[in-house]
Image (cartoon, rainbow, N blue to C red):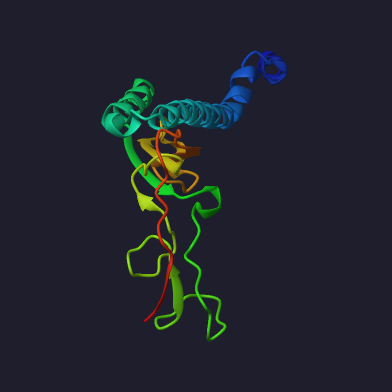
Length: 198
């Protein structure tokens, strides 16, 4: 009889139920928490990078900008590495005559109607390099009144190891771009457009 009463009392005992419930909820909760921290860090890094890139682009658009590019890039890199010292930062600048030309291909005569440039078709050589280009921009910051596309990419390892559980890469890469027009500190040099048929 005493044994039966003990079993009945034990069956009604709920003192360890919270621990069992926590064991079910904890893995999901921790995974969700790590995901939120990782997402928050990415958003913060992107925001900080965008601010640094816009500030650097404004500095580069001044007359003194072309001579200070290394210092400007170093400032952006230092700002990023304050947040993640192991981050890799890459820079690219391309200059264009005006805003309409940014990331645009050179015009061509599509003689076969396939929608893409083929060897032998005539094209307008807008950057004077005697070849058809899918992007007419030139490397660098250009000159007075030129429009500059400034791209900065940052690559870093994710903070939490859950990336392999969801099939993501260990490396996170974020990019920030801005387009600004250089100050009118002189006359803009216009390239002569030549039609070339190869």
